[in-house]
Length: 352
Ligand code: SF4
Image (tube, rainbow, N blue to C red; front, top):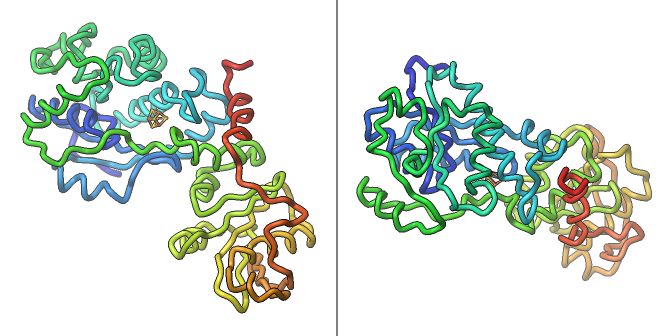
């Protein structure tokens, strides 16, 4: 990322309507705006950035904060979690901190967000917004163009760099004012509400809890794997099983050197990956996982006989002969929200 152009503002661009409008409001004043789209295993759509550049004419860069984000989660988000695994206040803080660190690279003088006072229960309450500003020590460089008129003027407004009169005073959860402003800007392709953050989805939260619980050194790559296919655990034994061709391909792409890769020799069936997060699996555990994986092949199950499962580990592949079974000694289980809650609560400093 080398930039000859310098920018006035870095906008935290989630691709939701509010961040799009924040960028447009500043551009309409003639300010030079660079949008930063933050990505991690939990949020962000790097594959869509090209389309957004074309649709909205924005100048967008992708910033990957996956590992730093996981580190923040593991240490325990200071402002706690929302309903699920979403640490929204800390999330905003970490993004603003990253943006702040990138300011010299872009020659930017301030950071802007599409936050609207009172719009979100956790991170856009006025007190939370103050915490975000104070924590990032960005009080002098953080502008919220959509609700600036109901906040104190920032130095950017006081200095005349930003025309306060062309900012807005939106508040609350409604979207009518935003939609009106979008119409004024001629935006016809309105992004749908909700940024698709997986940390706010219970199904995804259940995928992440056992990774946090059993894999203390998990990286973004581990959480990318947790997003794929079916996720089964037995203690610290972790098995990801493809659901369809697409997830099989994603599993293939997620293979790392220590992984065990299961595939059926003579029957159509899923690709599965055993990630050895707490030491090598015993032969019994490998055979148990093989029998479980084989049970996801209807044809292998119907054969009602022992079948061969190829187990690849690095350069070596061996066949394990098993009877397909869903009921194995290891008792593979998908994590329920009831199982996930204690993990989340143990990570939340507010519960200590
Ligand atoms: S919903 Fe997700 S991306 Fe949005 S602030 Fe909360 S944790 Fe961050």
